[in-house]
Image 1: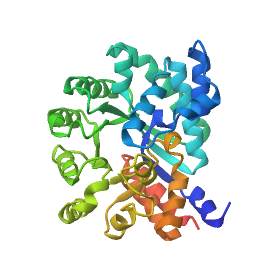
Image 2: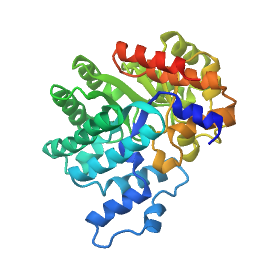
Image 3: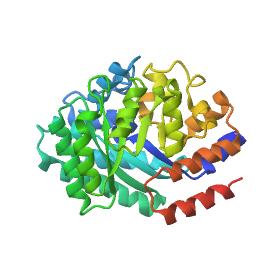
Image 4: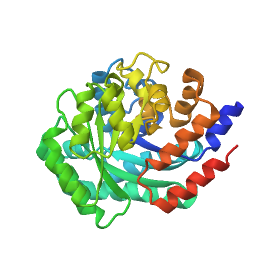
Length: 338
């Protein structure tokens, strides 16, 4: 391990754009298949699901993998393995998307099917807090290219369950932006905000800067991807002035074909312009790069210095939904790392 790699792993940092299902490795998929398939997948067959070359291919691969998440024990297993890997990278806090919309789809949109699944996730979260010192918040993610009514089920379930689970922090809107923008969900975002939920949104990944403006207009507090903001000078100024956190995912964007290379990703331009940028891995098992590697690539591909990597780690804490005292404690810890 190089000095830079050691520094990255010692940096306390948060991951703010991470899909639970996207952390399922081929080895774990093989284990899930052994539990549920009449003819279990070999490791080679499991790995084949992770081969794709565009965004549409990724969506299809994601569905194929999540279809094998059946019972609460499956969710507890994948969550615990995710949390173990987060801790190994020096991640101290993560805000993790659960694809509740997809869970409902596989279960004929029966809302009663979700509570046992969430109990499994909570068992893993509580264990990670005890054994790893890792804090986790959950974000309930709806699928924008399903109907508004189906997103309503997801967001209202988040509001309902938040009364009993403080770990449920917010809602998100993922899926294929090319099929639906943010405007149809305006009323749902207002309702979620009034219920005390924080508001995130995927925008500008496969669409233009107008999608980011639309996401901001419905109240989104953090923007995932925001790749196309680089094409709109006035939008960049607005994001800077409003200090809107951006959840950037460079390797994800390269693997889905919406960005040519890590070196060409606007991460550096956004950072130098003073935007509140954070680095994230999105779906690390699918894209072959975890958060520690994203920091390393920022160093090797875009010449981020150790001090600038430290700033990215600080940004991740500032942009999180942690309480202010927790943020202050972690920011002090980050400053002390040499």
